[in-house]
Amino acid sequence: AQSVTQLGSHVSVSEGALVLLRCNYSSSVPPYLFWYVQYPNQGLQLLLKYTSAATLVKGINGFEAEFKKSETSFHLTKPSAHMSDAAEYFCAVSLNQGGKLIFGQGTELSVKP
Amino acid sequence: KAGVTQTPRYLIKTRGQQVTLSCSPISGHRSVSWYQQTPGQGLQFLFEYFSETQRNKGNFPGRFSGRQFSNSRSEMNVSTLELGDSALYLCASSLVGTGISYEQYFGPGTRLTVT
Image 1 (cartoon, each protein chain N blue to C red):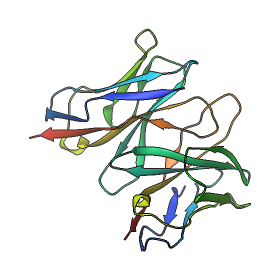
Image 2 (tube, each protein chain N blue to C red; image 1 turned 30 degrees about the vertical axis):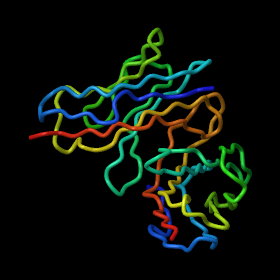
Image 3 (tube, each protein chain N blue to C red; image 1 turned 180 degrees about the vertical axis):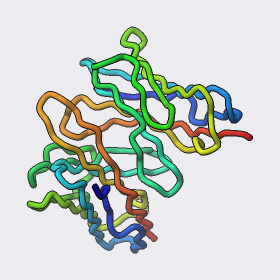
Image 4 (cartoon, each protein chain N blue to C red; image 1 turned 135 degrees about the horizontal axis):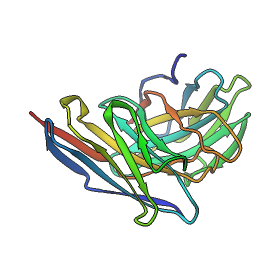
């Protein structure tokens, strides 16, 4: 069975610092991987997705993620944090099971001025 | 294009009642999935509908049901509400293809409170 683990339920960085949110997956077949962001009282917004075309994926708002099969990881990074990046971030995996996403527990990102 | 819309945005119900939530997908999207979000359990998949048929189902009791109409709009119903059903219910729509997993686009959610 597939699963997703996000290391760290809460990450705090200073404005301008590197953002690194960790995601590891478990899957018996090559997965599709996604990162979503959720702002308070809102739904989820897609940041980026991995669908095997390229291991380094660029998303919106300056975020990117690298798929590493050997480490079964799909960590999300951003070179310089902005106050507006404060939100909850979710990593998700899909095995093309018809619209079923398996989510990690989420990482809340705080950005200090 | 308009995004995924969900109605109502907020609901307060009493234990034992039933509730129906509505979701309108992005135009052209034929797959609609539902998720429950709670602080304790996180985001959990409820079910997915495609072409008016339930194509996939999560591990929820039979009190949770759904349907999809010919225009791809979907509804989910929860009968005999329990306090633990209090949650944010999210709907997502996506294109459908063969051999590829398209990204899902989420609505703002319906916040259900059961008292």
